[in-house]
Image 1 (cartoon, rainbow, N blue to C red):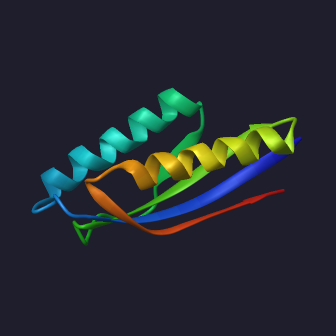
Image 2 (image 1 turned 45 degrees about the horizontal axis):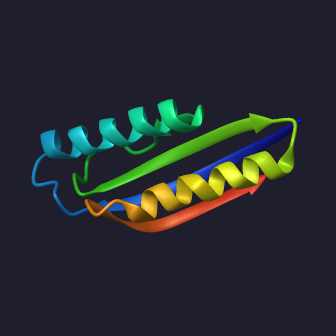
Length: 93
């Protein structure tokens, strides 16, 4: 069994309030959970409303499946125009 663990930090351009930030963050979490069947959580407290941090976890019996899944998740983050990806890291154990 393999476990993929990832960390993502983004800078949200369209967030001018906590409400704006919450809408974007909630959208990201819901879409990724539904599309890739992963566990994702917001790691920060929301004090800075234009920065968000996420923790991602995926489990599979194949290392290549998790690697492909993490690559697709990275592509998802990079293709969205509402924010800039500052950090995207993952490892597979």
